[in-house]
Length: 117
Image (cartoon, rainbow, N blue to C red):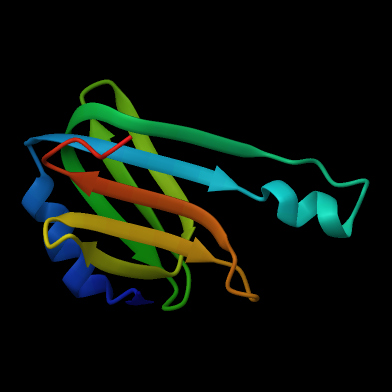
């Protein structure tokens, strides 16, 4: 993975606009929180192969950390805390957010084909 390059990632996001795509969205602090602080709450969200059509995609950030928003007819999908990106398997956009120690905190993937499960 490499640091997000806003213009390149926005171009890829725009290619998925108004198409039926599959989304994987995952957030976690999972074991990271509880191993180091027994008072911390574990939180996370996971959705895989949600089939959606978004009419607008926006990537915004400060040059280090980004937020991606996908506007659908009746709502939004967004992921915040994104830091890195790669085209996975040549056709799937993978955006991820890692903390200072390199641990995965959030991921957003978009593909025109379903993800393996």
